[in-house]
Amino acid sequence: MHYCQGMAAGPTLRWPYYKLFDQLGRYLVCFMLIHNYFSWRQRGGATPTLSALQKVAGVSPRQTAGFVAALKAGRLVAAEPDPADRRATLLRPSPLVIGEIGRSLRLFVEALDLMEDRHPGRAVRLGDTDALGELIALSAAYVLANGTLLHPFPRVLHFTQRDCGYPLLTAVIAAHYAQALDAASAPRLLLRRTLAGRFQVSPAHIGSLFAEAAAQGWFRVEPGGRLAGVDADFLAEFERWAVWQMVHFESLLTLCDREAPAPRS
Image (cartoon, rainbow, N blue to C red; front, side, top):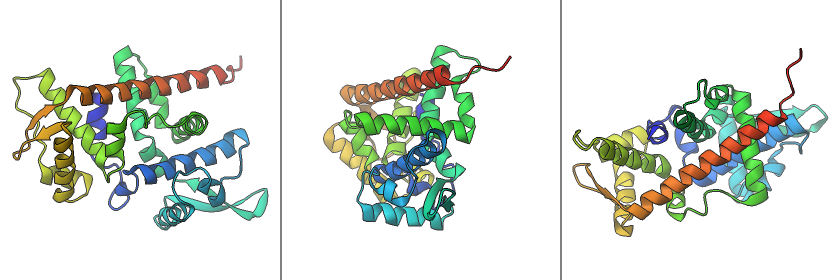
């Protein structure tokens, strides 16, 4: 529930930047851009140019170039000369991009910290932009080698492919958990206009996502915003996805701990 509440809380960036990240194709471009930059900086990887990004972004070269141009115009990505080759231009992600792309990652680690009762938790270190960027890069390297962790979960994938669909999904799951944990409390209403304002989309878009889910039998939201029910298989898929994510990031953090140089005496 902690994870879902955090993801459903709304944007950490002001309009129009938030929507840049809440659709899978755009998210993956940023995800791989961060990977390329930190792989180059930390481990001597290939120079993080636009050409290198177009090879791994997961969308067409033209879409990648257009999106990177928008990020540069918004000062979310800096284009810098390569110190080793002034003819090459590096793409450096801003701390805002790293923080927004890493938000789900950090919240999954926070959720596991709570479950394991860790004080201080492992998520504390991810408040540092470089530490968060490095973990994103390691996760992206895993994806490049093994495929995404998302595609085995087609119903979760469905929402990530819609504008702000994944944050909306987490709002629905958070409402379900709140209702299940305290059935006597007033239901957490999923009002279209409220959600549209929070996620910076139209109420019609929220309604369309609700209608798709109802037609598939995944969940149903009544006209007044009350969550009428969530399909058990749909909920189980989301929970498996969440477990996979927590295990994935826990294993990467463990790897980082093992590879970290020992402190000097």
